Amino acid sequence: MKMTEEQVRIFMSKTAEKKGWHLTPDTEHLGYMAEGFMINTERYGYLQCPCRDSWGERKKDKDILCPCDYAPADIEEFGQCFCGLYLDEEVFEKGGATGSIPERRDEERFPD
Image (cartoon, rainbow, N blue to C red; front, side):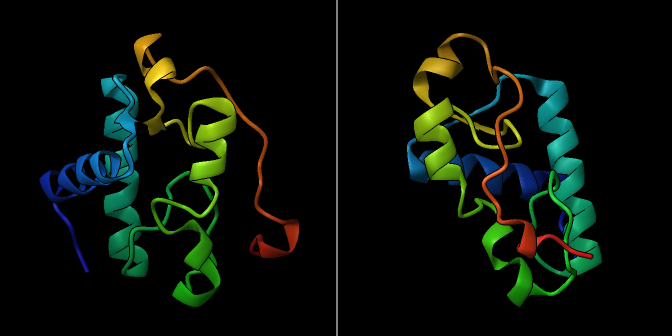
């Protein structure tokens, strides 16, 4: 499966809208994320989060398909998801992601 940058950007925008989140206003970071999604969809065939290592198997990676299972809790607690793509209103109003946040994914779910 191959996606264009426009398709990826539409996906990101619609996901943010559906969840009540905002996309990062950092256009450079948004571009890196879009590029990562395009690479991952070509490589794996699904929209796996570009900021996490993949098993390359959809079943093992289902928790990190965008938006990942951890995004709601991260946004609730820190105002942003792990990769800084999706933000709550407060962080968005302050201009974007506030820095790194702790990884919630269990270590046994990391690829070898």
